[in-house]
Image (cartoon, rainbow, N blue to C red; front, side):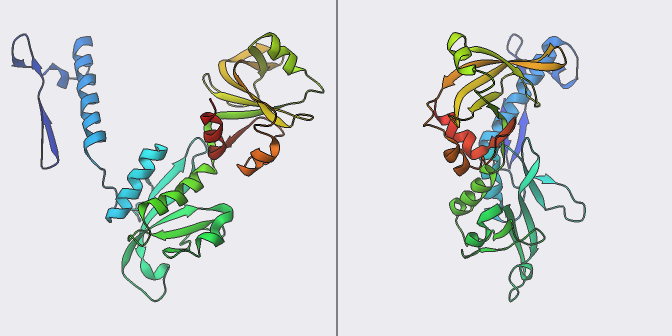
Length: 290
């Protein structure tokens, strides 16, 4: 039985065979059954928290709405790293762990010289689109970050949540996708096309920190110059003489016209000289092509 009043959650667990309150779950490692009950109860509480409440990390309504959009869309919560600035929340892109956004409370004079008063802003990494963003009302040269690749956006409803979310998404999409790789293959030295025609299983040099279940796209060099295969890693760390191998299972083939190098460059994949991660934006496009 769970009750919620004034944003406070209280709960009791009852044994239906005796109609009495069950309290053993409060003691850690009381026993296997007690631990099962305890874990189930915790999962119910987490579900209520995630589906019935909106976390308030910051002061302004828009800052909290934007923070929850980031959590919902990119599955990363703000990190508060500084004792001197406890309300500065950093959002990281995984697996690179690089920052793509920071929500901060500052004096408005830091971004608009003629005005004062505390305001919350979000700094967003923009790379090559900084100049274009600065033409938009509510977007300013970055406070306390590299002004060539970051901008500051005021969180005072000058811009809508949708407009700010679009800028954040474009930033996030430029970072490497997690658990997704591309590896090059040169048909002059290895005829993998013939091998894939015989079997959907392929052994490959394990030259990156890959894990079971990761997605690997194979880019085949001239005369194709395109991604031709999508594979799933089914085994890693296979010893072979002086190197490690991974086992790949083919799940999809593409024509050379679907993802040529010119198209890959449009999505931020500018060079494929060895195994590497791919940008989130390209990973989304490839994942949608099932």
